[in-house]
Length: 455
Image 1 (cartoon, helix red, strand yellow):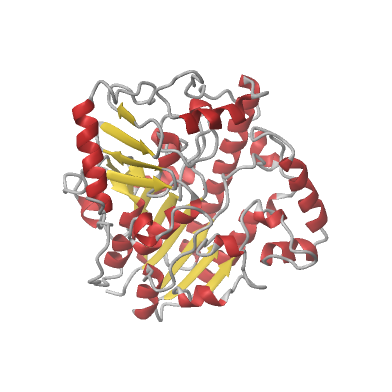
Image 2: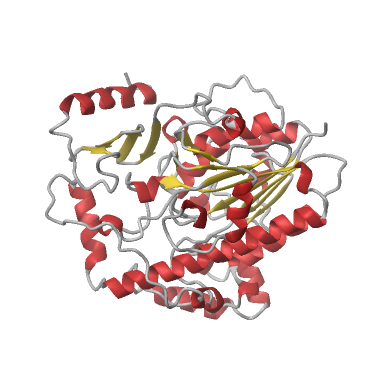
């Protein structure tokens, strides 16, 4: 049997419960939902770094972010650390990467055609790296930053694009306004076009990997008119409430809450969610078109599909936006895997992590690695929901870290109030029980240090 092709689609800032199949929010994701019916949906997946660069570094390496020295977006991927892209290339795969790759985000060095030399070193045969949403509106004097800016410049739309984003910088995080671009000129469509072209140019002479890294539904909240219109009358569930006087929440979280509260009304919050929903449905549409491309090129029966996100979005929960905290909206993400060659379990509730994707992808390609990693292959769970996996999950950012089990979540906040939540009794993480459950918190603290290698 020929090695399978692998299509891996990563969204940006897509939280776990904003998926039609999950049944928690009234949102349209028909193409993803359809894929789940023939694949596997992992309902308890967490990212291992609650922001873009650390999370993606863990995916690429199979190693927790702290071991890589990558805990913030300012850190860069260690060039001597193996990636699964390198392993695939070394075993005969064409390796395409399109969109946000984030190996060296802080350098903003994308190459004129998205082909920065470092991306070849890290395993790609066909790299096409683009700017992120907000980066695409930045400038280096008269020098264009990346390929999307060049695209907009050729179409005479770059100046208005930068001006529009500059105006947003003066607005609060919950400011909403539809994108000035038509769908065909959005950054996500730009990424899609490159990925589709790569797939269409492949043949059956050797297997391929195609990583498609979209930039939505990351803020700013700027769905196109067409996709916002689908939800303009929708009323979404209220966000989890916050209490700025709750001294059992860490001080740094309460200070962050204060930065977001001024001027935020329930209607403005609902409008944010309308844009968020519109962007997710747009992503579902583009994912459907990629699946159609597989069928058109007759790759559909031998192509693994993986769909996930680098991290979540707080979306007003606990009075917070974006990520970089250890609450559920920030650390939990959707994960869907489809292997058309197998009959799969439709839903798996075992604890899984994005770091598990490294060994999973190598297992699909039948590549054996002796490298010591933190990830564990998900392949057994695809066909056996009772297969053993992990008992705990780890996620980290620069000043906070989390150990999560089926029942408890322990959050260690450096030089601040630590937290413990009973996720069964308190799924919204409203009641910090760290003083009431001292034995549990001490045991989890000890285990967190052991897992990190600090014991």
